[in-house]
Length: 84
Image (cartoon, rainbow, N blue to C red):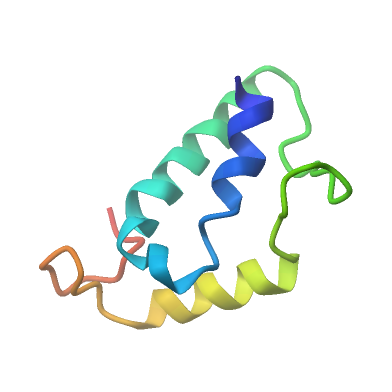
């Protein structure tokens, strides 16, 4: 299940229309990474030639940095979207 969810969830990080889902999405991704690490899998291994259209590493980093600096107003709070 992790092998399917991991790349599929990454697809939703970069597009702006999914901004409201970033906080729960990143929590799910974190849980999947922790599970993969506990199972001894390499969490950062992604197949960029597969059926899923993955964002580039640069695109992911740019999106996460952009959303980190903006107050998280979508959820009604005033904290950054990655605050616990």
